[in-house]
Image (cartoon, rainbow, N blue to C red):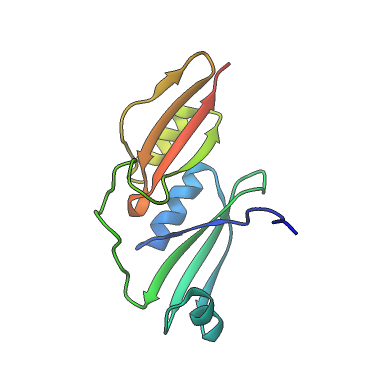
Amino acid sequence: MSIQRMDNVAIVVEDLDAAVEFFTALGMELEGRAQIEGGFADLSVGLDGIRSEIAMMRTPDGHSKLELTKYHAPELSGAGPENPPPNTLGLHRVMFAVDDMDGTLVRLRAHGAELLGEVAQYENMYRLCYLRGPAGIIVALAEQIG
């Protein structure tokens, strides 16, 4: 037996509306929002008294999803520095292929995104960059140019 697919990546955020706006500006589509609480949530996650709201975002091709989660209870827990550098152990970043790097950056900067470095070109194939989005999430963008 093997896995069928990767279903989604979950990201815990403090401001769910801002995160939805950011990923919508990136080009993702809001699939739906839901309140999550009760025994099944406590048991599956391993926390007591979960009250959360999620927003499921999907890529335009429908193959990839991000689950943005805002916990109302229990209280949020910090795992380390507020804005860890890209070489921090754990989830590194989420990368998206884009068709217009410059236009995408303009839209995301309007939602607080900040470049970690610069837009760089890899050979004659890609333009790449890392930026920090909501809740300190590192988002990488790749534009194929050749």
